[in-house]
Each structure stands twice: as C-alpha cells, then as structure tokens.
Image (cartoon, rainbow, N blue to C red; front, side):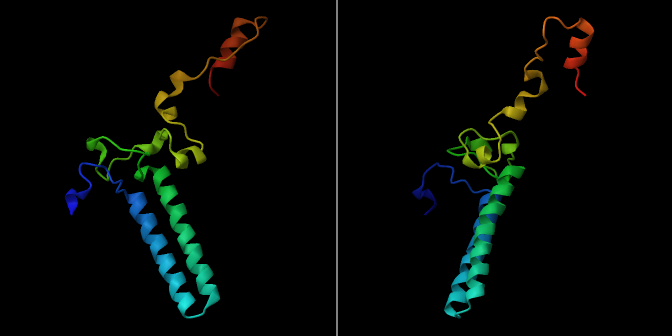
Amino acid sequence: MSGIHGDYDMGHTVAGWTGVGIALTGFAGAGAALCAAWLPGVWIGLGVTALGGLVSWALHLAGWGKPSGVRPREQWDWRVKDPMTGHGDCLGCRLAGRRAGSAARGPAARRPALVPAHRTAALAQADRTPA
C-alpha cells in the first residue's frame, strides 16, 4: 500500500496532523451531540472543528507546516521548520502578511532613505540611522 503514491511528498507535518486531530474530534463531538439531540453540543463541536483549522494555521506560521506543492526529499522530515520567512504561493502565509523570503533578505536589503537635496549631510545621516 505504501507504493501506491510513488515517490511523492504527502505533506505530513505537525501542523497538519494536529489540526486534523482537533477538527476530527470536533466533528465527532458534533455528530454525537446531533444523535443525542443536544443543540449546544452541535455548536460546540463545530466550534472545535473551526478551532482545528486555526490551530493548524498557527502552527504553520510557527514553523511546523510546509509550503504548497512538492518539497525536496531532504525537507520531508517533520522537524524541518522553514516557513519563518513565508512560503511563496502559500495562502496561509499571505493571509498572515508574510512574503516568501522577506525575512531572509535581512536589513541590508532595505531601501535607502530618501533625503531632499537641501538637507545637510548631518541631517541625512541622522535620518538613515535606525532608532
């Protein structure tokens, strides 16, 4: 059965499995509450299901997820924590305001401060130094 997918990264990550576990628990709880005709339990279960998605996203942003698409084989290990700088083409990273490689460029890649020509050199230097 393991050879059915060939040599493909299925994306097993801590973020993915934790989110699925929480969502499955919420879904099962909502189903049990529905069978017991307990309406508040249905809403609680649906809330736990939604919480699973939020927990998965938070763990992804904390570095326990994976980028969209196929990863190289050396990154298949669940301990690889690479999204700290944001994944390219990743909806979760874009929703969080992360751009792929934005933190990897570091402070040296910042744009230089624009200073009007009439300012003195001392004031221009004061504008460029970080506070």
